[in-house]
Image (tube, rainbow, N blue to C red; front, side, top):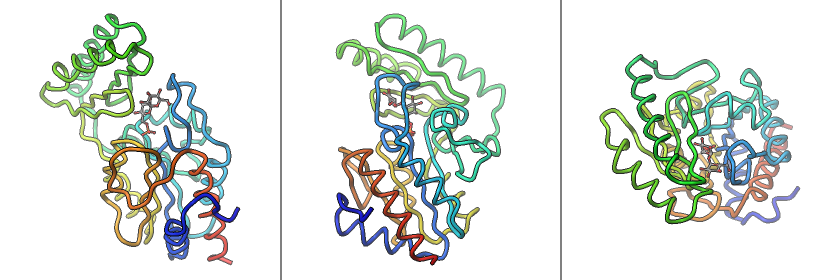
Length: 260
Ligand SMILES: O=P(O)(O)OC[C@H]1O[C@H](O[C@H]2O[C@H](CO)[C@@H](O)[C@H](O)[C@H]2O)[C@H](O)[C@@H](O)[C@@H]1O
């Protein structure tokens, strides 16, 4: 793998990061390791990307992580990566880690989450194809499989209703609105990972709105890579999950060369 398919500026940024004393390779899951599909439970990762991440995590002075909006257990199940394994898994948009919740969940949080789920269930019941995903600190209203007018109405009801309740944090992503009962930030999760690993360079790949918080926490020695279309603060862009595998394999080869 020579990095064919990724542009020269990204190749040289990856090579520079791969020469760091300690490298952290971190990636989003949906839309990055796995293509976007109709049903969340059908999201299967590209085996080449997972193999490259696992191989990176096995190298000296090199750490690897997957940072996802999915619940931690679901992320482990879909990715095939163990919660206790060498690749660190972070779920719930940076709020759940393999060592437990980063923020404590109280009875008030649980009660608010139950109200959100009930509200989402009521919305979903009115629009065929709309479904609710319930997670430890949030609920997601998925509209990908609804007729366009129904999808718009369902999202509007969520925006004008529960999204405005006190203590609720709303995030919109790919055909989804998600309401969380505690503040989430993939950026803070990356900061914590950087501090824990002592990484002096971070490579992060993401495709969605919540990944922008991660990109915003990266500095000049890091490499931020947006996957697909849409506005971004990332400094590099690649088209799809095939290119993700190319980037991860190229990074692995560069890192092995550095360590040789
Ligand atoms: O942070 P990520 O790993 O990208 O997770 C973001 C959300 O991903 C999932 O939903 C998205 O992917 C589904 C499967 O491709 C797709 O059907 C859905 O339309 C997308 O919004 C997941 O279900 C959510 O919990 C994550 O927050």
